[in-house]
Each structure stands twice: as structure tokens, then as C-alpha cells.
Image 1 (cartoon, helix red, strand yellow):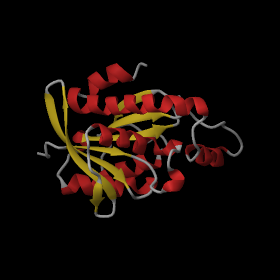
Image 2: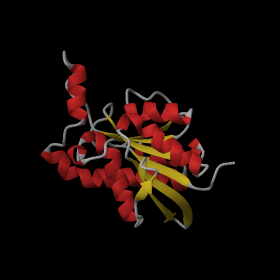
Image 3: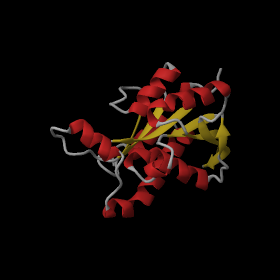
Length: 199
């Protein structure tokens, strides 16, 4: 039996040069949650910034940890697995928030399991946890032009910033992403999917 705690992990790359890039959507959503629930983020074994709090919505109270892995994206699993094992948190109580190129900017999709879809952070978490049975809140960032230099484009794209219209829309989109995470934790996956996946 795992702990009553939930673990919410927002994925990104640490360091100033990655701030505000598409690949750091998970970090940005985590920042919104940290602010919303007044968390103090502290170091966990050099692997992550970790905050601990209580979420109270609709009369429900849930204790949770919020993590921003300090490992680079493709080692995210080390941080998530370390925290999960340290605090005895089952995959069923883990929510990972990350950018997704298969969704248009502004779209949110929530799912459990399934393919990592080429996302290195998710591949790493699947590997380190030995399970893909955790919830994923996928925040759409759209994708680069497919072409001869597809891989190069993809790398530059996810490490690129947002255009002016997107920057304007970003705070609201991140607030929706944070809402989606809270809905998974408080009301369950099906309710969250119904509220957010169709928009």
C-alpha cells in the first residue's frame, strides 16, 4: 500500500537558457501550482526541487509533493523515481505535466499509460519507474515544420520560445494546466479527461 501523498512532477530543463522554452511547459505549470499552494521548493538529493503542501478543493484535502527535476529532461525519471521510492508513492498517485508537440498550442490532454510519443522525459520516467501507469497532463506546444531536417527542427523547436500571441495566452493556458492537475488529484482521471480533453 503506497502513501496517501500524491507526487506532481513538472518536466523541463534546468538553467537560465531553457527558461520560457516550449520544452519547459511542465516547469512553468509547476511554478503556477507552487505559487497557488504557497509551496517552498527545496533540494531533494540534488535531483529535484521539491515542495510539499496540501491542496484543498471542494471540501477535499490532499497532501502532495511538487517536483521540478534538476536532472536534464532525458534523466527526469531518476528524480521522479527517487522521490516516489523515498516517500512510497505508487505510480497511480503520480501526475507528470509536460509539453506535447502532437497537440496544438493551448490544447490539454490527460491520459494514463500509452506510448511516450518520442518525449524523452516520459521515456526516462517509464524506464525508471518500471511502469507507465501514472497520469500525464500533456500541454500542447504544436510542432515544427516537418522536413528534411526534421530532427534538428524538432530540437530547435522545443528549445525555442513562444510567439507574441502565444506569450499573451500562456498565463491562462498554464493556469488551465494547473487546474487539470488539481482535477486529476481531487476528482480523478475520468472527470479531468471529460473537463479538459475535449476543448
